[in-house]
Image (cartoon, rainbow, N blue to C red; front, side, top):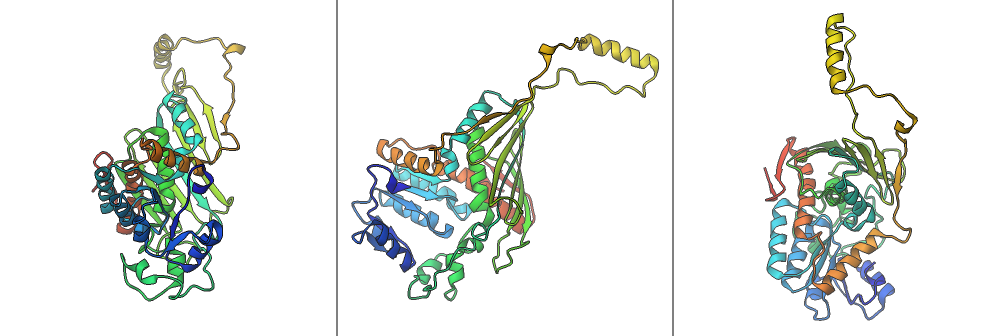
Length: 390
């Protein structure tokens, strides 16, 4: 996406697998600078900004090093692998004065911008419940990424890869399917819950939940991974409750994604490319169930009830229209591309996009706490203002 935008040039690439560096030169030219050491990219004067798309366990270190080297940073979600890294990245951004944008593209989606507009206008009244899910039903969706036949200690810089974590003998599966392991990834939480929380926070303007509880397990993909393939979480927000779900074998479409907002006067659902709105005005009167009351009590109740809710004569004009409002972005809209466009606009204008380090941590923090809740079998507290766990 980056190189498809005007006035953006890829001048250097870093990867720990030789084959990917060869592919970069095949695509962008033999003169492209390539390296296995990201610090060589940061030392280049012709690099203004970097895109960090590494396994999660390298996100915070490279982000901080890049900021200290004077580079603007686009870092894929989750911003950090561990909670204690969040404030370190926020501090580094503040100290550097550089742009940081987290790569959860729902923040740039027209669908969530429209959802924010409708919610702010009171389209469904006051929200009381949000349900969000992102199920994947393919091997690749479940992180069984392809392993190249030439994978070996000669083509992979394994020692650098495992440097921040547990030292192990070379294992191509742990390198190429890194999301399956706690050492390098963040499981369902960091890969998918962060996306759902990003969309939710954009739409509602919320800073985050105060209480988090999760459960889950390995139900189908028993391939040696140590993270769940089914995960459920509930979160308490100040005004509503949130339910999250991921299942890598739900029997649905290739990727089943949605966020459903339930309010006092309607329901709104969002997907990748569509928003639907069902308006349902609050009931004019609550009704009654007085059949078991005595006659005198029924008559007294009805007199008081009708004084408060006068009986209305039904008319054709009073019939409510049973319609669904559907909103779809232009077919040309691509949230991934727009997210990169927003980053480069921020780099040029020096006006940061709102999905900065603070926003990124407010999405990553609660998501990471779902792992803590599951692994420690407890509810977790989270202060979204101070971004502190308990």
